[in-house]
Amino acid sequence: MYENKFQQNDEYKAKIDAHRPLSQDILSQIQDYYKIGLTYSSNAIEGNTLDLVETKVVLEDGLTIGGKPMKDHLEALGHASAFQELLSLAKNESITEEDIKNLHHLFYNKIDESNAGQYRKKQVIITGSDVEFPRPTELNSLMKDFVTQIPQMKLDLHPVEYAAMVHVHFVNIHPFIDGNGRVARLLMNLALLQAGYNITIIPPVVRSDYIRALQDSNKKNYKSFVDFISEMVLESQKEYLRLINALI
Image 1 (cartoon, one colour):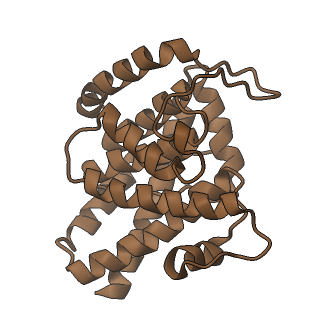
Image 2: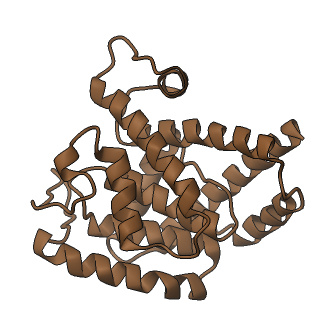
């Protein structure tokens, strides 16, 4: 269903790079656009009920939406905070374990401060799934191994494949009690930004395809997920280029 789009990814990156450096005003507008878009889409994938407009109101106006759960508002605020940290981390060349814990803490501390940025102490069981995540006693070792492997993945893989594999390996460890999917998508975007690509959004409308590709990765079949992400990157690149052309 999805195909490898690395060549098109590279072609669109070249088109986007031709417009750089962007003015600070344009860059700020684009970052605000993606802060709202990524916050909405990443939360919606996990069942958050705020739509795009409501997410914008919560983030820009500081208002609560009547009839919506308070947790949904806190997830929006927390994700926006983590997004701002993502932009700062994008200036670095590496991804550290502390970066990962900090992104989770920023996202989750308004929801559950005691577990924010802390590896889970309970086993995660997904009802109706045959996926078995690592036990809590394994997490420290697995996360250290994961972070150690990141630089080599970055060297060996196409940047889009590298970002997809960062997402896959992290989410299959599932180190936190909640918010793993959102942190995985933040880490994927951090890998993309550090490689000179732009923010990539996974629209909620393709959630079932996204979950199916992730499930394939649990069986060590990574191709379908990498192909899926390459198409998501391509669509986001097209949108990014449209934004630039509209603003310059």
